[in-house]
Amino acid sequence: MRALARLVARADGRGGTALVELHGETPLLLRQTPTDCGVATVHLVGGAAGPLAGDDLRLEIEVGPGAAVRVHSVAASIALPGRAGAVSRMAVRAVVHAGATLHWLPEQLVAAAGCAHLAESRIALAAGASLRWRDELICGRYGEVPGGAVVHTQVDYAGRPLLRQSLAVGPNAPGWAGPAVLGGAPATGSLLVVDPSRPAEPPTAEGSVARLPLAGGPGTLWTATAPDAHTLRAHLTV
Image (cartoon, rainbow, N blue to C red; front, side, top):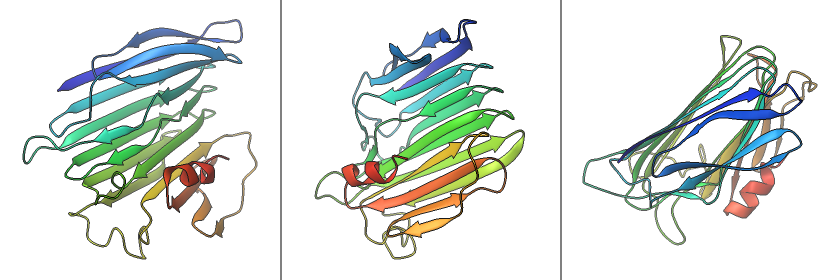
């Protein structure tokens, strides 16, 4: 299955945000929900099971100058096996203009047994843009060994690299569960906050949570591992 969804937001001139384009195809269905303090809110609704191996899904987001958008999903995304040798792909491309804000806060990605999935996000931020970007990965459903999943995130700020991050788990990722990567934890994730008005914070590491200021712009990255999705979400709520 191939699907394309697109979201375009513009400042409405009254302190709010208008969604001038909101288009989706099954299983990537976009639904606008009540605005929160001038921030346009959209939920991603899965119109079919999956993604299944062989699916090619794309989501494009553009947030115009002065606009603010929050994107959630209504449920976790479960990457499932499909035809032999096929890979499922979910690609997100986001452009956030000067003075704009994007909150990307979906539910978790679950790498079910036998899956082969690639989640790739590329975000371009203009100088003065703000971002809150959360990725969470659960390694298998309850009691099962996960399939193969790769999560890659690329963020540029003012035309310069800010973050390049990749994580691979599953049978084709040697050592992924070892002490150098997840240390046996079944849940892992990260939260990137880019806010030009926020004071820089020093690096810290407490238990399974680390905070790292980034050199390429006004960004801070939190990373965490956890025994379950609930604990992981608590670690990444800052």
